[in-house]
Image (cartoon, rainbow, N blue to C red; front, side, top):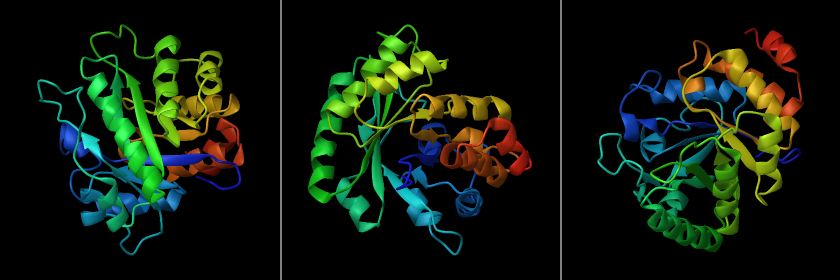
Length: 253
């Protein structure tokens, strides 16, 4: 996180485990990480494949968040995210933080909450920052963007010790402010499916204006025609408080 404003721009690239080699992260991850770093992102996030094959080569420096949980889209229990790595491994590879994906409202949410509690304790022992990706998702959730369930998901992460909470944008600033105000930890928004450039920049600006701490956009960045320029626009909004029009003009979007 930026030490002055306590905000962050994180680019998740963990999708390969879940959905395979989708556009933007087919193989040459290192080149994509460098383009993202040039724009001013604070960190990339991914599984152990990122530090093994892509991270911190000869390009600009950028933080690394090692993702510790996962599942595949073809699993009969795809909402159940199991542990696939450890906090100790993150320490060994020099990661700046770790992350977990937790789905609240699915049949396996008790097991995932237990994982979150365990990893949170290990993170405190090692002094490792923890990002919790908290999504209302599963059999007991009718609308995963509804403020009532997003508030619960975000607060659960803070209660169990997460340092940063990533969750869904609830659709408008007023409802998202309820999420931010109800969570002790900084809250950043997920990008979800790929959207239009202006749309994601406007959502970013709205979230920042009501107290959000930044963004964690994956496909919207690594599938963009010019990831560097898009990240630059995000940087200007998140860290410099530019308007959307000013950011787009400065980033040449």
